[in-house]
Length: 145
Image: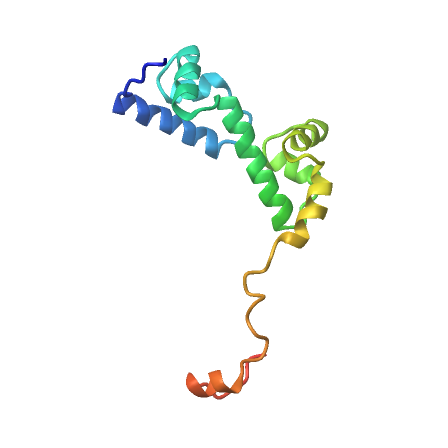
């Protein structure tokens, strides 16, 4: 049975600061040494504490963060996959496509094609023309359309 110990507040703050560095630096190459230095720990001690604290390694966290951003960019606009690859910190389109396929179950282009129809405009439910009863009730005189 594992023994659970409370973590020192200061240590948790340093680990969290390092995790924020990883989260905001997903678009560039970042080393384990840099992340550990942010937490003021040796890289091996940092690696153990990070995984124990957050439930995943710094590398897994960074990959997940890059994947989330890649998905957002694929759905949000018409950026080519090559540009998205570089935007999320990959230097090689093939490795990006392979990584994305592993996590999404399909290549980035296919993901965009399948998921785009599922993205709903939050204002689609609004009527194109405001009914007269609403105009009267809210004191509006002109028709919106």
